[in-house]
Amino acid sequence: MPTQQETPDSAAAGKAAPPAKGPGARLAASNTLWTGLVLIGLCALFSVLRPDAFPTVFNAQNLLVQAAPLLMLAVGMTFVIITSGIDLSVGSVLVFAGVVSAMTMEWLSGGDAKNAGWGVISVGLLVALVGGALWGLLNGLLVAVARVPALIVTLGSFGAALGAAQLLTNGVDVRTVPSALRKTLGTGTSFLVVPNLAILAAVITLFALWLLHTTAFGRYTYAIGSNAEAARRSGIKVTRHLVAVYTLAGVLAGLAGFMSLAYFGTTTISGHSNDNLNAIAAVVLGGTSLFGGIGSVLGSVIGVFIPAVLDAGFVMAGVRPFWQPIAVGAVLVVAVWLDQRRRRARNNR
Image (cartoon, rainbow, N blue to C red; front, side, top):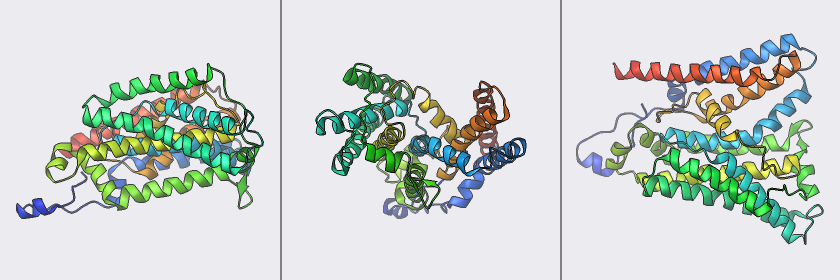
């Protein structure tokens, strides 16, 4: 299990902190390696079944673009679940952030944002991030300060954020998104073939990987998920840290909303009803324990691509798309079962 960082108080009491586990040890302790092998196996299978369609640059670009917003949700969810929490609101926060961003850009442009410049786009991005952060902050305060169960808090904000987005727009999508945003971030590519959306997602993911696996913030996240009371006694400010974690998840959901806006060129109020469950499934498939204390950003990246690969592969192989959620559900149940077995074995030592 992840360990807590030794503090002056614990040292004075003569209690030496056990050696901290590094990223490699945490990776080996999770299901990440097995999930990675499953992803490789799926890619190989569909490449054999449809060698003319699956292993192509075009398909790879589509997979990267479709996975980018969900990856942002999954990265934030990784931090939350490692603390032994949950966030059911991220899909609705994505929608809300996209709506307030699009409406802001529309207002600044006098009613039609299609020809808006980068000044307006920058304000739209800032509004999306702030909108997501406020919902995350609210979740964090209710969970950490008011001590309301995270399941109830985020289920409430799931409905509230979506309802707020519908109230602002009367349930009608905002369709005047700057063309410059669509052409650069939404559909543009760099290095000849790599989508800009995927590059942005990769940069944020690398930052999150550094934050979780190499900083005190990450060590405290693991410590709280392993034993919140022990973390508190060791000097970690658990309440403040949980608020920060939920706020981070909200910021990343806001960014995902802006990315979705850039890709589709419109808000998608009714198009993200399952994003929260997909993000949770991706994180758990990647080896993060629902019981807290174990997980990795790399595992969540792998988990995000399993449903995407299954979806694309089934379509190309002529399999009815309704089998995709069944397959993902089966893999998810197996991942949780393996996690429970690992925990029982560790507790019996």
